[in-house]
Image (cartoon, rainbow, N blue to C red; front, side, top):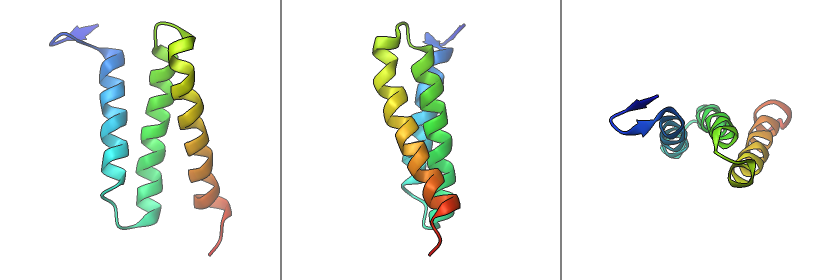
Length: 79
């Protein structure tokens, strides 16, 4: 599926980038982590949609690690 010459996979990548960028504007750490986690999940999906796993694997690994860190600080680390 293409819209304006951009594939659905590319739209997911752009949306993921936007979510990560948006998370850096948050003052509330909980909101920051939730928005960043959304971006990470979208990037993981994007990585799996890449033409080959060789291209997508670094994206998947990095964002899965960031997702785990966000989950840890959001749900397990008590201040």
